[in-house]
Length: 342
Image 1 (cartoon, rainbow, N blue to C red):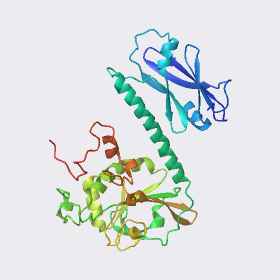
Image 2 (cartoon, rainbow, N blue to C red):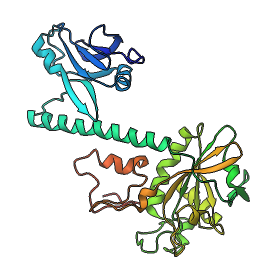
Image 3 (cartoon, rainbow, N blue to C red):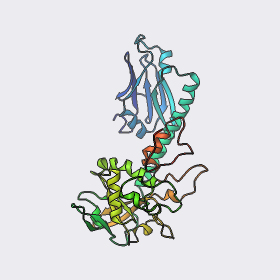
Image 4 (cartoon, one colour):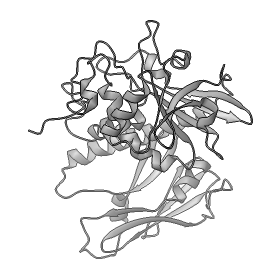
C-alpha cells in the first residue's frame, strides 16, 4: 500500500531461526519515485527501478521461505545479506526475492533454477498482460437470436431453455463450453467401458479430451458460480448428455443440447461439414442486450511443431501439472475415458 500513490516502497528482510520474511510496512524517504529500496538487517540497501504499480503489488506480499541455516546465529552480516537479496528481472520490472535453497541442491541447479525463475516471472507478467488486453476488448457483436436449447428441469424432465435464461439473477457473464459429443470422426480412442453410454457407437460417443476437461471444471463451477454462469452445450441428444454426465459423476455442470440450432456453427464450434469443434465462448449481458465477449480462437491459430492448440490450456490442470514434472507432457499419452492401473 505504501506505493499506491506512486512513491517508493521499502522492503525489509527479517530473519528468524526458521524463516526469512520480506515485508513492506513503511515508505522509503529517499530515492526517486518508482524506485524500490531493499533494506537488509546490516543497514545497507539496494535500489532498483520498479514501476509504481509493480511496487505496490509487491508491497502487499509477504514472502516466507525455509532456510537451511536455521540453527545459525540470527546475526546477518553484509555478505550474508548479499546472498539473501537477489535481483530477479522479469518483464519491465524488478522483483526482490529472498534466497531460496533446498537441501542438497548443487550450484548448477541453483543457477539454472534462478534463470528459470526469471522466465516464470516473465510468463506471469505476459499472462496478466494478455488477461488485461482481453478484459479491455471493445463490445463484441450482439447475439443474432435468443437461441433455444434443450435442458432438464428440476425434475429431470426435458425443457426448452433460452440463451437469455442461462444468466442467473445478478450475473452478467455466461461461459459456455462446446463439448464434442459426438466426437471427432477420426478419434479412435476407446469409448465408455460401462453404463448406458457404452452402448453408443464410437462415432456417436463423447470425446475423451472434452470429458477430461469437464471432469476438472465440474469442481471449479462451485467456486465461480457466485460470479458467473457456466454451461456445457453439445449436439448430442439431451438424454445422451444427461446419462453420460450422471455416469461421470458431474453434479454442477449444466448440460444442454444445441441440436437443431445454429448456435455451435455461429460461434465457431462446428466445421463446414457439421462436425463439432471444442470451443469456449463467453457472453456478456449489458442491460437487455447479450453480446459475445470472447472465444478461444487460439484453437484455429497455427501451432509450433509438437504442440497442440492449447486454446483453453490455462484452465486445464491435468496438462499444467505435467509441466511441473521432469517428464513433462510426453508424446505417448492422451486423455482417456478410463485408465488401467499398472
